[in-house]
Length: 172
Image 1: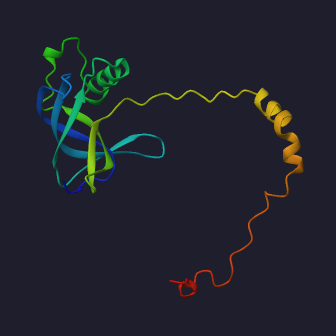
Image 2 (image 1 turned 45 degrees about the horizontal axis):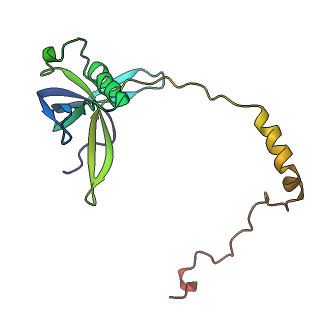
Image 3 (image 1 turned 90 degrees about the horizontal axis):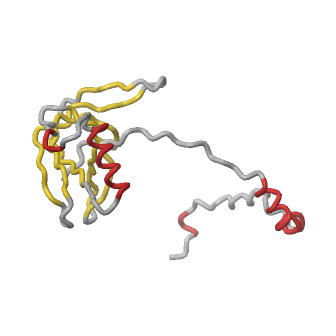
């Protein structure tokens, strides 16, 4: 497949949906979407839509891997956030004509660069990193003598010779 879209977030209009099974037999929602707009955020974090001149169809799959609880949660998040569906009966899930939040990433398949498409997950809140204030003291007690006795390794490396860029000096 030729690359038409840069990695990023997009809006697709769902043209077809189907329920299928994965190779391992798990249920899977398959959506064929026409990519119609690119999503970008301005400095204030406000989402902006840029309508695209050329629109190509892309297929995305949402597998419901029954043996993996986290994968099931991700699948539900994709259907609810990325597809905008709110409901409690998958038999009532009809997305044709609806806008789907898509994400395109760069990938490779059989040595060829390609686009990889997925339905967006909701933004995740990140927890602040927790720091154990005892660790630096422990490291100082464990390695302090080595740090004090080590030569001045933190000095900058010597500059390269003047003609380091001269390719004629390479003996081939």
